[in-house]
Image (cartoon, rainbow, N blue to C red; front, side, top):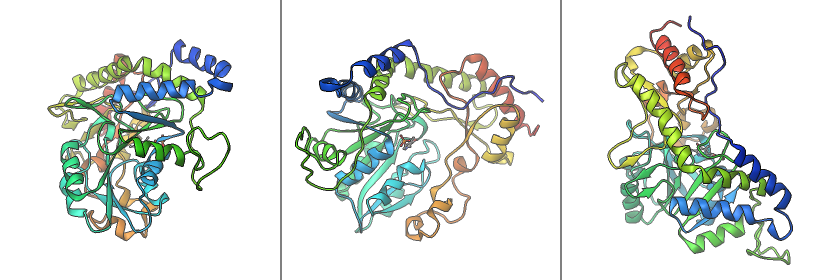
Length: 380
Ligand SMILES: *Cc1c(COP(=O)(O)O)cnc(C)c1O
């Protein structure tokens, strides 16, 4: 059996001397009156890159989603529609504010929320829709915006996996009332752990600033809290890491696209493998190369992972349907619009994320593809 000599990780960042330099600089200088300098720079760089007016740096994207929902005033008795197939962080915050998630199906090609399924799930309690740009794909934002407008709903874009993706002239993160990003170590841009909330709405932005700082007015020096809220801030050293990453954003996205290109050249359509979609009008930043083999092969994602593992290659399963997870056991209302059982969405059953970290060279992609072909040929 062909085995990779050194273990190939599934994800990992690109860190240069520039990141190290700015982190060192921040740990020396980002104190006293300069404590917010790197955070402000990072926020401005992201807002300008995405094309939104306001951005706020946070400890993680989960906090960004929590704050987005809280700032929009969503709470007990409200329902928020989101995709059944996503990382749990997209939907868990709905429960943090006491509202009810409502899960609906994704589209088979882009793996993003199905606008028809969203419309079918709208009811009197619906307050918002969360669209998730999965694995670098972008949602059908034009339709989602039209649906949200028609029904008077808030639209939240979870762009954690799609920094640098684009739909026509607009970047991922520029859709809806508010958008969120993650800078977890596996993501396209990293600060170790980190997140950002972005919006064009000045009032919403002000509300978020208060909610993330224990209910203090921005600039409050008297410690006079106006309400009980949350504490979600990113440290200056993390923000400095983010600044260095944003200086390199175009090169980072180009590298992600190059890695995907190497996989696509090797797989094409020949093996009945479907990779991340890039429909007309879309630029995909390919956060993670995702391969979905034909159902006819009879291998599910956990078989594929086990086969790759034996060959010293790390991979990840395509996100499972949230409705099938133990985490959502007993929440029957949450699942009322999705098919019961754990079959259904083919990509979610059979897809895997292949190594897509910034350490990937064309030679390493070769090794992964060779191993993956082996696994698909059931040389398990
Ligand atoms: C990574 C991720 C998150 C959560 O990000 P954290 O920074 O880890 O909180 C949310 N949504 C999606 C789709 C993600 O991939």
